[in-house]
Amino acid sequence: MKTIVKAPSLYFIATLIFASSIIGSSQKRSDNVESQTVHQKQSENQTIEATKSNPKSVSNNETDEDDTETEIPANTEFQFERERSFGSTDQVGSTDQVMMGEMGPFAVGPNDEVFLSDSDQATIHAFQSDGEYIKSLGRQGRGPGEFMIIYGYTTMATETNRLYVTDLAGMGFQFPFRMHSFSMDDFSFIKTMVLLAENKSEFDQLEGHYSKNIFPLSNGLFLVSYHRSPNDYQELDSFIHYVIQDSTGKIIDGPMLRQKDRKQLSTEIKSVYRGRINDYIAITSLPFFGKSILEVSGDDTIYAINHTEEFRIDVYSIEGDLVRTIEHDYENVPFNEDNVIDRYQRTNYKKELGEGAVVKMIEEAEELPTHWPAIQEMLIDANNRLWVSTIVEDFDEYEWWVLEASGELITKFQWPRDEPIEVIKNGKMYTRQTDEETGLEQIVRYGVEVE
Image (cartoon, one colour):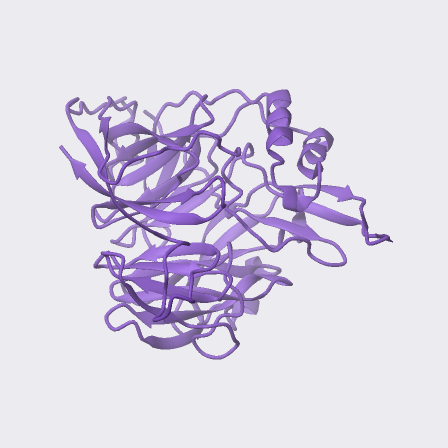
């Protein structure tokens, strides 16, 4: 099978409202396509099984041109056993009066510690594996180890015994300008590091771009993505660039990879607030357009999905050299504009943009896709296995594919969209559940066993 290598493209979901002021401060993982109505109710020790199915195809730019397929035993099963939950209803601190606020991103430590970010209190709550509260890391402020704001754009990442958390300059500026590191041995603050590189101006490709996502590497360096503001390019094409930075914030290599950023739609909204006209431009990305994804494995190998319309993963060395390409045949789900508009109207999708804003964007769009993307998300576990969620006809669930690092298919399983899988680590799977009545979120941990 011949492999055609194309330049990659990466994504991060952005929902921005630009006007005389930014409207709406709650950013709730709006990349999940629909408002899911089927809630999975599971007991604490429920076991879910997924049976391995046969792979489609795997291609490698170093292999022969002849088609090759690897036969996989058909009797392998993944079992998921619910163990416990962490979340918004947990008490933190030494008194009953201290409660966790709105949950943002989270991370998992080497000994299954769980670090939950608290958007209301601008802090990180640390819990032992058994759910016992340890302490809170950082607080709201501008000093070292303090957070201006924590919400959907915040990145939390771990490497060996350190936790890294980015800090944003505030709602008026959507990109992080620094990051804090904390020890996961004694949960102490270590230092604050510059994220927006001081020598960025030396690289023409980074003009108008700002640092966003961090990927800590095993050598103490960081892979950092640089993006433009959706307000700058709106419905035009824009690209994400990746560089290597040291702990002082200096770019020492790159830009080394480039990925196409997600397509944005915009529309003018006319509204009246307290008797005053408040017109603004609403800008957002919508899930039926392809996006780009990038993850880094524990051995510093880069896995890049350069737009999710195809089931294709390009594998790069940390130097940016293409090593191989993983491809699987996939039949994309047809896109039906009327059905999507009906669903968005019923669920009031992205209501923070303004009433009817998303439907207006779709109706005004010059071009819409004929099919949904193939891939929704990608995660990597400690064994360098790839967990890839795919979009299927049933919009209440995703079909997850688990692949070896080589691309060979291990198993497939269905999982509800309203309980997104966000972390795979130490033989555990961590999902996010939202209570339909209260809106409170919790992180649920499952044990993962392969038989």
